[in-house]
Image (tube, rainbow, N blue to C red; front, side, top):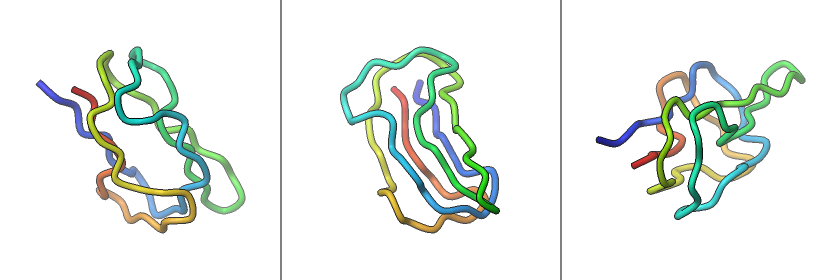
Length: 71
């Protein structure tokens, strides 16, 4: 089963910490968002392989937007 990693707030994508195909563990930072000059790490909720990344640095995201998928 795959895990959808979604934005929890309106923000801009500051940094992508992983690449497609990378192995991640639960708790690893996947994406860094920036809102109100604060950096907010978005963490993997489960271990697996990064199946897709749906954003790029500089993208603006809304609450609920898909950031990445872990398979």
